[in-house]
Image 1: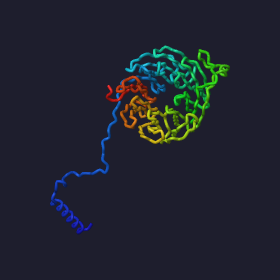
Image 2: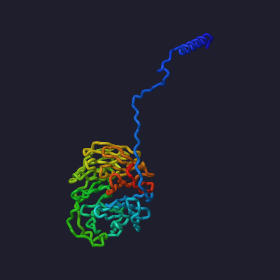
Image 3: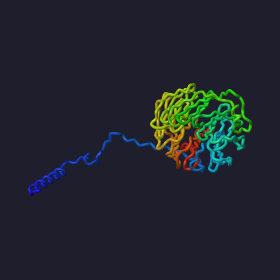
Length: 400
């Protein structure tokens, strides 16, 4: 750069500095610079956290569905084949051993009979732990309870599934072989007693409990011999429908509407004919059985999204969890919804989609939350099983 150009740059710089120094300064000029945001920023409210009442170690990866009795007693499988009955305060009421591996516990609502399924048998106990009866049924699913006390279970041996109807006294009334692997866990009983089941390949069944033969088995309740099988009552298959997909499960609305989910589709199914029509398509595969609210709202989850759907299939509201929602929803007497996710959280919502609170455990929530039917609503515990190996009793914040 030549000398003249340097001289002119120096003079220009001095003039600029001088002009700035003599310029009058106002209060606004001395105040901090204010940046206006185009979008108003609101504080994000923190979700209230639920309170733990108690927790018990039951073994990591516990796949047993717990149950609750009409008196508030909670029944849960503990590792090494123990069934434990807990009082609502978490103290042990009684313990029963001798099971191979408990797969499910179901309680009869009126008299509190406890039904236990393990790898080989179905047991019936009184609430006081007395054995009423047992019957050999290998690899059976949790019982569905009919209005007359009949138990309906499905056994799965290899590729064969069989639906059994069992009297309250423990004898087999009839059985029906299914052509697809099935389970009562995703099934329902209609108001007329029809048994609705889901199965592999999106198969749906409707079986009438009415039979053409009244012959029953001996009182020992053992599986029938070949000659006795030919004399057993035969139930009536009302219909079979294949909606496709991997596995279908069902929910029954007392108003007479049947719903099924398979892969990412929610179907409305005719209870009388089995005709199915797609009602809603989710953003991913449904991960659990739908639940029907008192106002006929359908609650179901697909991957990490929980949906509240109208009977016509429109979205009323939805919520995205931080992980796959692993359980069906439970609903208490006040209409509050509870469901769990593999993000380790139990979520509590009202039916308008407002999150009330959540509770975080040390592992994925494994089973549908249990609601205590006898505690006061403002103290009502919610029971959950976590993959951290614990069984929790929790409640809303500030319930104590």
